[in-house]
View (cartoon, rainbow, N blue to C red):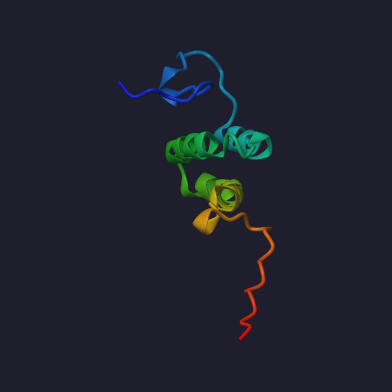
Length: 98
């Protein structure tokens, strides 16, 4: 059985009769609370919420949060190439002396 990240609550585990907040409010909350450490989990959770939206109108309203999460994921998920950090200064090439 695959292990889910700590703190993850699947939508299917919510008990019937327990009021849950609107999916759009959940997406908004995820958007504003996400961090570099939690972005992968939050993005996956947001996709599950998006899949549960019943109408195209609601999916269009959710678009802004999904777009923002995708942008954060893209920025925070970038790994520096060849082991160098983005902000690292380039070393000058040694001059050729005869």
